[in-house]
Length: 423
Ligand code: DSN
Image (cartoon, rainbow, N blue to C red):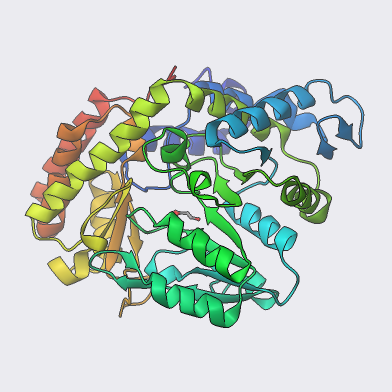
């Protein structure tokens, strides 16, 4: 660690101390936030590289400033690898995050006042899919769909179709940040086609599972565009990605909107890190990783089911679980998050469908397996973690019990250190 931060250590003790603290926190605790992961040293090196010095407005071969012989190499590598991973004809790797990717996609495909049909945040969608707190709702009109039955997770496709026929959206948007099931992609695409809308999927949460072929690829069902982050299951640096299946016209609109429409100089260090991460995801070992993420989530599901804790949609078919800890154990989500944090398990409180509690202290917790699978956990370790979570929650006032659970978590972490490399 000293080597990695030796210059910071000499120059800036305050930042060094925070970095050292985070290194220890990540090493000695379990990361169960389903949108987080651990990147390889190679990805971190690229992200911390000399490319942070460079301005590269434009795209490879068409830049506004000189000196682009190496930035063009890394951006082209990132684009080509992204295309290969997702079966896309076009990729834009310049957006800084998933929210930016969605905003650029909306502005590229819509006119102010146009309508988007997206999933309700309270049923698993995302803020950028049309929550009233976001600025984009002042520009575009968002209409939301929900699950028909939160116990099974089935989306109300018939209601969605009727709504689409009524409001004539320009985009039918699939995708989620807290939904544990696969979507019926045929239905989304057929509704979009019926009303003449673009079919777009925000794959931020499951991008790595798609790339690793552990779940279906929406492009195989005719989606036009997919937006994503690169740092969740895809295990790359923080950032965004926009993929276009085959339309040059759409891809051009997206490129123009990302730059110069909405962003300035791309973060080339980050794009180099994306290229490295996409290279890792193309390695056959990434398929094994993605499949294991799913098996591990199933193993945790089994323990929660046996313990009688209600899981929204009845369980999981992907990397995440949404558990109703307030309904099942009488523990508010915020307290559950704090209790588990105190034993070295990081996850997040989360609203459940039609939650009667407030967003800052909802009924649920959301957790998942991307990061612990990167650590090398298999089903056995995941079951044990799920058991320890439930034990901690049930014994949350017993300090001796919590200390012994924390000690076991630390032992597990020591046995499964965060790897430096995956290839
Ligand atoms: N913050 C991300 C997540 O945790 O799912 C989504 O933006």
